[in-house]
Image 1 (cartoon, helix red, strand yellow):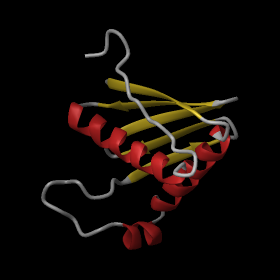
Image 2: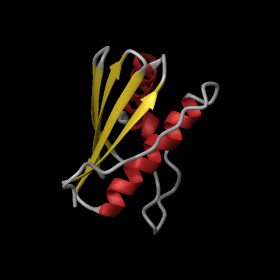
Image 3: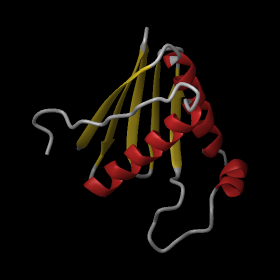
Image 4: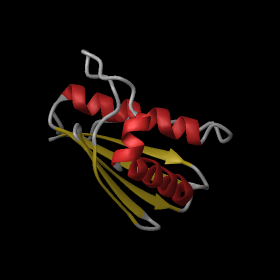
Length: 121
């Protein structure tokens, strides 16, 4: 499994965690997914199938057809770890998370900088 991690500095970590879980949880319901998805494209860059969302006040896991990510909210920090079977799927998860976090945190100008853990190939 390939992984990438990001530590996002924010005083609103728990809020972003809850918002991401809520947003993706809605995407996982059939009625929302049908409205939310753009038409299928041959390049496969349409919205992912959301398989499962689990969330508490300080931790969340989102499972997609591409892989999954986990989030942990700490004082002043949202820690995110993305996991996927291949580079393309990992990139898609990173792009999706980065775009959502930057949109949700636009007032705070959130910065998402991904890194690969040592030994991950």
